[in-house]
Image (cartoon, rainbow, N blue to C red):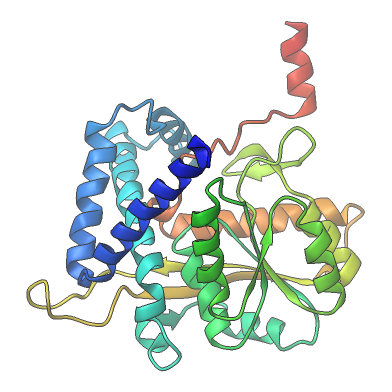
Length: 322
């Protein structure tokens, strides 16, 4: 067994030890731990390591020039706290959210009727979201209600961790598809009127379609629009926003868990798109819906992604000429 294999085993052992500890935490104590880890990432670790400048630039683009440095800094702190709460909730999810207790965890927000109508239409549905709110809760809720999907995610380098997350995502009836070569699994599923879930908020590279995201052109995946047009798939843009805590008493008494509002921000029917550029129109519309969703709770979005990493072709050519 080589050194890398031993390293993966050690990482997995540490991870499982943390899982055991986190599963024993009460909701309020888990929140306190997330606050502490958020403080470490926000105030103690080197800012280069935590990509503080990237988050700062992204938030300035999203919030506008009127946002103060103090406001942006507070959003970054709250973002890290939110991320660590997501980690805790993922680990505790299978014990806290079950068929008979899901309504204690999730309440329905705007777009409920439109979302469920899409899944009952007899047509394939593409559930599109981003690294916003608790995206794993959003996926799991549909599984608990019997709506299975092919969930697209990037393979983890550590095979043991990858298998753990694969089991987690499939325990409510979904199937996990590797992001590498996802089309080979996703397209046949859409052809059979199945459903897929995917995140669409990362840079799509120089060949992506550039549409405005918070007022700035961002390289965006056009494959979502192309698949929707080819397979008559409805596109639902939504997510699960964490609601304010209502833990009661000390750190041992309170409701079952964190609470979320499940929102369907928009449903796009490709058959109703009246445009000379339907791919561009669909891509702009789902990106705008995701932006509106993020504006509901900016601190619950993962701003460390370099969303505007790629530049439009004309701009790149200008830079080369200079």
